[in-house]
Length: 321
Image (tube, rainbow, N blue to C red; front, side, top):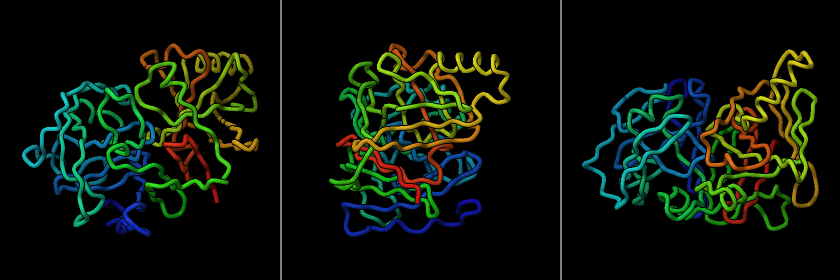
């Protein structure tokens, strides 16, 4: 069972197989929402992550880890995926990932489908997180297959409101006439980041009441990442903000952060966070050539909201009711 939460409610097949609703649980020790699933008959828990593409499982056999329980990796119950091992980097950790195939389902006894997943070695499990269920669908063809690409879901909703849940749909969860924030693929197409991150142009970025200069010469791109708890910003923005705060004798660096987006129909949508834990992105990202400000926003901006994304149509909608 789960600490504090007992057993999560059962996943429901709302309407049909084309739409699936899966319960999520917030784990304070991880500062993240986890989803449960079954792989080769063992139960695992993973952080719901809109910042990575893959289904993953741990190679270690820890019955009690990160404050929730998971099963054991049993290679004999998995099949060769045909993919060679890779070295992957997550949250500044690097380590080998072995790619295997096995039967997957969100709940025991449900019909399974065979999926390719990554097995994290101890190096990748040492860090801040557990394993991830990645929700980035589109990637360059040469990298390993994404979870949504394999399962054929087109859109999803990470609902972090009163009854946290993940909704997966093979149709669009965003209506034809609904307004939305357009997502852009610049980082993948122009700057060669292999996954198509869920990224939008910021109309404004305001920290402690001071706006960042955002215009066509100084664009600001925002990546939505539910696997991150606070915020990560490009080094230049991080250093510039330090200087600015010292000069103004501000008490906090990132006390009140507000990001505005313009919707397709021209409305302004604002999301904000108080004191998000903020780190520099580092020089090691695939986007170092991007000229402008890059901002990755995590749960401190998204908690209490529902984030709906249509990965095929590049649309994003926030609901806060």
